Picture 1 (cartoon, rainbow, N blue to C red):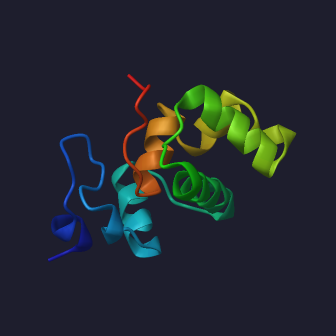
Picture 2 (picture 1 turned 90 degrees about the vertical axis):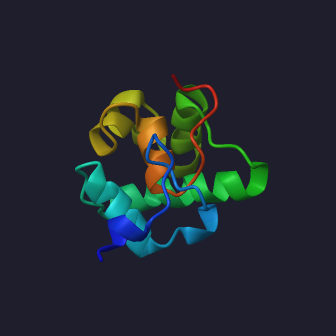
Picture 3 (picture 1 turned 45 degrees about the vertical axis):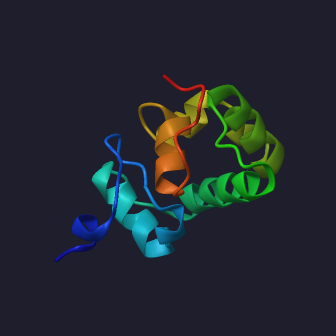
Length: 107
């Protein structure tokens, strides 16, 4: 059985049990999204996980862009930069890979 079969995911592909998250799980969730994680992805994942630990919130797109810019530098503080890393809806895709709940204000 491969890892993707053992993960408990909701209908949108988010972890049901957030405690199940690990770096290996993140790699698998990213693979399922067609993404191969590199150091830039991990920088974003780490700030998201830290933000969630402090606030209990998965940020929607606008706060996510602001957080990335504040924590990682101006070049990260744009939706275009984040979309290059996490195509589609960066806030949702990054939260999913980071093992966080779906951002509440994302459609």
